[in-house]
Each structure stands twice: as C-alpha cells, then as structure tokens.
Amino acid sequence: MKKHDQLMTRDEACKFSAEWLPAWTGNHPQKVASFYADDLFYSDPAIPDGIEGKSAFVAYLSKLLGNNPNWVWTQLDAIPMEGGFVNKWRLDAPVGDKIVMCRGVCTVKFKESLICRNEVYFDTMPLLSAIANWNKRNHATSVSTHMS
Image (cartoon, rainbow, N blue to C red; front, side, top):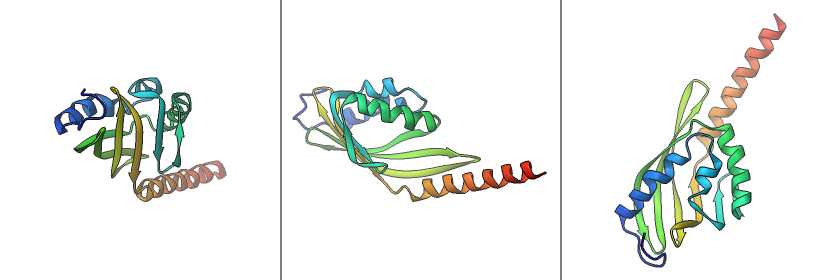
C-alpha cells in the first residue's frame, strides 16, 4: 500500500478488502484485529460513540463475532478518499431460518498499512426486527413445549 496520506486507488481498496472482509466471517477476533493499528478507533450502530484501542476492539469483536459467526460481508464498491476509502458493502446475516440482507458503508482510514479508523453505518432495523421475531417465535415454541 502507498504511504497513508496519499489517495488509495479503487483497485488497492478492493485488493485490501478481498482479505479483510472475509476475516469478519467466523469467530476469529484476533484475525480481524490483525488488520488494525494498536491505537485504532472503531464505531458502528451498536457503539456509535466508538471504542479506542486494540484490546477494547478485540473484546467487542469476541462478543459480536461469537454471537454472529456466520455473517458474510461482501464489498460492493470502493470509493477512494485521502488516507483510505469508503467501503460500500453487503451483509448476509443468518437469523434463524432466514438470511437478512443489509447494505451499508464504512469509512476506512489507514496509518501506514493498518486501519486506524473504521466507522460503520447502516440501518439496523431489518436485522434487529428479524432477531426479535426469531426470538419471539423460539420463546413461544419453548413455552408451548414446556407446557405440554
């Protein structure tokens, strides 16, 4: 990768994402964290104020990926910006017997060749609604099973 203060090309962003995004599938927090600087800043809709530092990030990833090991992230496009790129992505999130598809964007800024700032934005409503509905169905099923 070029020096971090130069404009990243679309091809460079796509090449980086071809390795980085698949690391988010499975429950491998350390693998994901290996793409990030020690002094990183990360935010997403669940933590809009963000977290700082690799140890806090790994702790967050351990819970997130542990609960969602089968999420699959796919890059739709990359838009170069100074010091990184805007990543347009798709998430296929298994929820019970359905796959919930979400689209979003995130900014990816680099310090040297590691991500130092990653801010994720997407509408969580479809995902949260699917999880709530699945939990409600499972709770109703388990209650009726226990009453029999």
